[in-house]
Length: 488
Image 1 (spheres, helix red, strand yellow):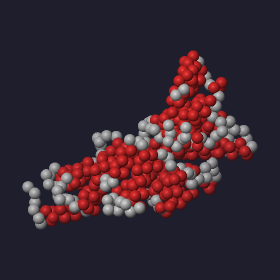
Image 2: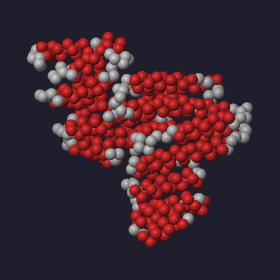
Image 3: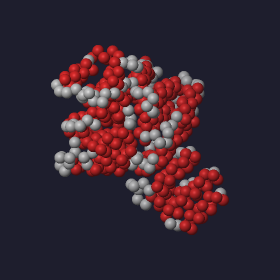
Image 4: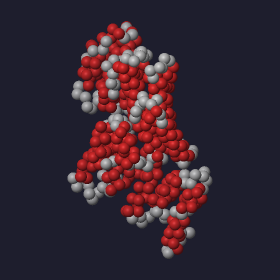
């Protein structure tokens, strides 16, 4: 039986004050706690007391009561006679919890219902289907209308924030880091600038930013600290003045791992893999940061004038082989690929620069196979990233990666063939930013050094040439290319 006023208001006020008491924090790290029992009891009521939406979200997050918090917010949303402001607060709190649980589809569904303009729904649908370019266009269109004053009466403040947030997310997925760096500096978006600076990279600026502006995600902060500690004064760790650099890195990694494990234990068990995916990505980043510190330490040992052992190079080769085997899944978010492969590229560059410095100094001989190793690993990373982009229909990203991300003049023929195949397949799919892509693909194949390829590789190339000719409507040339491919 539902309580009547004023007894109901007194109960709600008293219950809210009770649940907000600081002494509950002593049970925060326990598997079972009083807050969980309270929230589980409240959702069993037909008419639960109405609590502040932000309080529910806070308790659900801090006391590992995610699902109870979501159910309680949903019950309050279904109540009659809700004011617009109360409904918005409840929806914002529910979206916040679901976002932290990585339930992107549910968040998109809520926003599709509450959207006041069609661009919001269209952008969210495009984003969930992987069409980030179209999503970005929708959000830019919505923000443009808001700036021109055409949406003042319709769009809510939270929806305007959503447009900017999702526009940034799409830009991240498409690796538009130069644009995001300029944007984050112009609007003083500190957390976004953190993400941009280590990719550019600007290590001194990143170090300064981490001191001036902290970020909420403590694990990510430790990762940033490890990034710039590893990159600053790399190759000089043997110097007495810089001997503690690796110690700083290991401390940051250890603290980051501790924070990541704590966050892992705070997530709901038995609720699928989605809530744990961001933590799994961070675990891999922390593991590879630890391996990076070992790689640069091995490199530093090899650079010493008295060094005469090839063991450090063998150890580095083993680490790089492990990285090859630890690639993300083809259908993981492009941002996951970008995070891992960009950092690997920084490590490859650091090793390459160290070897080049040793070569230029002329102090002693060096293992020339190291440069070949760096070239091969860089090519493999770029080709793998481009293949993922093409598979996920991010064709412009695929073309840009193949044309801009590889810094060396030479490439092994096997890697060159993989690069050519990915580029031609992307042209066949029709990247929006490329004029006459099919002809571009034909030109690329015609300039390939077929005489240096094996028979199998030559057949693959002619099969692609046949696909291009068929797409261009040249049936006779397509038949000739396919015939050559089958008889090679």
